[in-house]
Length: 231
Image: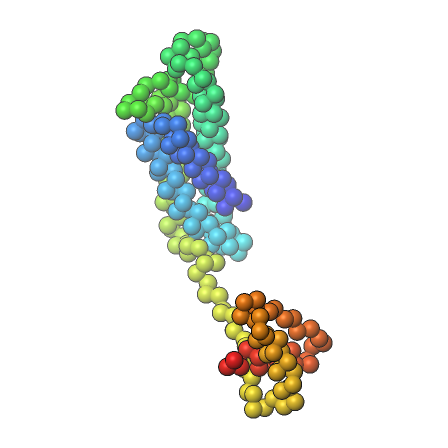
């Protein structure tokens, strides 16, 4: 459950970053740093969630409490990011005309309720998104809250990527090692098979031959004999 929430948040942050690049938006410095911290902390938490959830299943109450705190923080982050993405999409749609005219003609209610105070400040070719003060405060608060959760995870000494650290047994390779000296009575079949494989047109149009029959009659042995032939 927690793993799914954290993954979703990272996807949303990635979407915001992609919008920044695509639309040439620049966040004010303080907010951009908080968004970067959110991403870093979520990635660090994601790396240990598998171990944390396994320990929760073993009735570790302290870990269960930590996961509950993570969920609470994640839901708060999700609320702000969803609002952010929604308003960003609206901003993209509203940019059909001149930015200054669009802001001037916008209804008073829209000006007050807008997620951004303005979107028409151009700095070096970038549009700087100036967040409302209360929204910037929210981002700072949720970043601080998640920072506390990320710091507390170190108390539990979680193991990162448990499934990836478990060494999986290598699959034993099998092959049919044929001792031709112990194979009797298959010369005719072997020569017939080689004749079909190495016929006059064999080099220009290689043949593909299927060996079909009941199990245990020596299909693999015959194929191995032909394959090992020097011709």
